[in-house]
Length: 402
Image 1 (cartoon, rainbow, N blue to C red):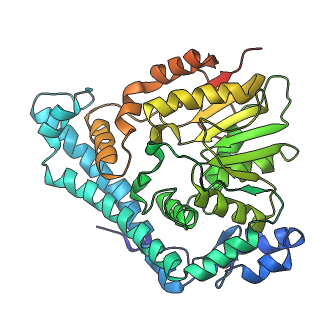
Image 2: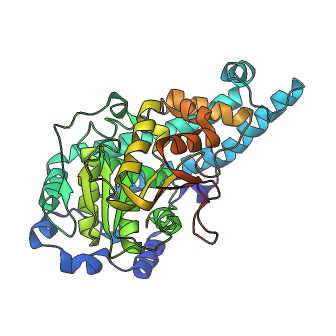
Image 3: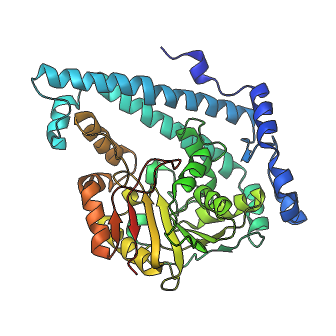
């Protein structure tokens, strides 16, 4: 049964408390904002900390429900499906932790109603999530476009758009079944940001997860951190968190999606954090050789083709200075997902139905395979990750040889 408290979002009293706790975003950014952007800024229902509330109570209520529905699908239904798959395999005198070919996995569990219901519920939450956001931003397109235009040439930080840039085919699909993907919709950044807030079940409304990831990024052994590159930065949350941690560093966030970096820049301006955002390819970033002290990315490589992965690793080595740190954060570069029949089913399902066409290739590569690609590119690889005590899971670290 779905519990009522699971489906209902924060009350008005809770929102007021959180707003007081984090402080008004306008207060933090007021000195950095010109009147032109302030006049165009759309916040009809204000902000809770750094998160602008959704513009209507109706839409916020929808997303409270969707978040609760997704939470139920992620937890209760996932546990039930995992147990069901384990029971099926044991009934057939097989182990649920065996790694089987996906064809055999589907033969055993693909037609089970409970397993299918679990997958269907997750997918429905994803589809409704995107649809409601798409309707809001496209239904008020002129106002939201004006808001971005007002911020385009403002600081702190800069914005570079390259609409005529040639994009590899692998970048053009609808990742996570987000309408238009990252490159084909003017409001990709808006939709992605609020959509992933729903995906994180309210645990990242203040960028908490990205702040934790930024805190885990290791420094070069000489302690020099003057320039940082965040590849595949999407809506810029990690880029902003990196700038807040390394306040004296020149931080760049790049993404193939122009709408992504445009939204990321607008949001950074609104928060008052000076990050430089650019529409560029991770495998052809246009930066000079030996330029950055740290290159990082988050949940990017499983969305890159195998050929693109090799090129991104080569480019990462090129733009790092000797002794610089490469810190990719994704499945298999850290603890990785679990093994066994259920995990195999979910990886296949994610690839087939959630717009992740290279998910299986990335899973097949595995931890050792990815580390070997890093070595092939020229990195020295530390499989033990950064020092203990950091605020995120341990990840593999690459160092550019001196």
